[in-house]
Image (tube, rainbow, N blue to C red; front, side, top):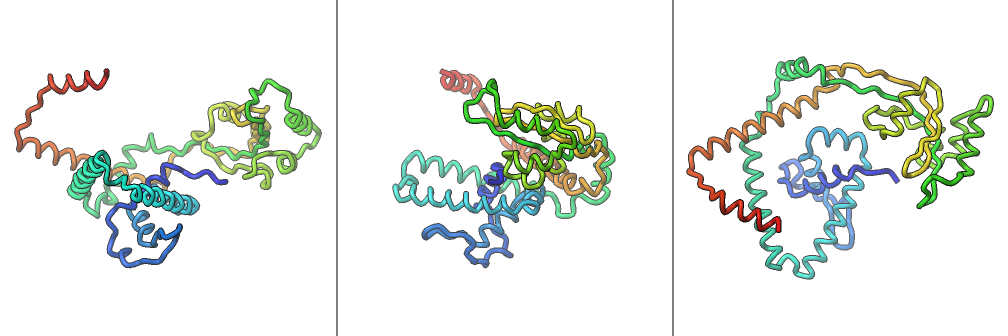
Length: 299
């Protein structure tokens, strides 16, 4: 099963409570259902509409993330239904938490509204200035095109026992004219890649696990590593090609720069607002009493 970005899924679910835009408000098409609980197109469209640009791009690249998120949302609604049936939302502690959460939502929503940058920001000039100022950091990391043969180990195997399958694969790879792809097809335990001759595609140096990266960077093109022991089993890597690190082009980072500049403008506007707000009111904090509360909490 394909691994889902859980942070992204949770972010999608958290967006359900966001205010829907008028464009989505009337779309009541049912896109998912469990028992008598329905998820409408407007719910999902609202989630997508309120995602940051980078998360939207990730969704466009991998729609499976949205499918999994919808399932998680259904599960959340089932839990909510059961909790309400047991009047969990009526308990004093829960009511207090709801009220606190309500206040936090009101404050955060208001702060977002007054700190939201103008729609025209950043301009093309702003973007190019930011690009020129940050060129040193805007680098596309070195990438490796890799294939692997993965040999799973039984649960609880500490790796100190002989592995007949691994030994057989190592022996096959040492044969003259050994075909790595063919061996991966018949021997690899990686269900996602074995049908493609073990190919993993292009992977950034930064996302490789340290143990694998340490071996891969030593390989020459078409070379094969010794078996690399990991917690899940043995990985034998083949380096198919390399793309060296390079300067990212303006177009490659344009949307990321725009998002970052808008975020920074929003933060500075928010901070300026809070500073001005506090200037207009007299604050008094009993620091001794606050310190006492902290001491009690640590006991």
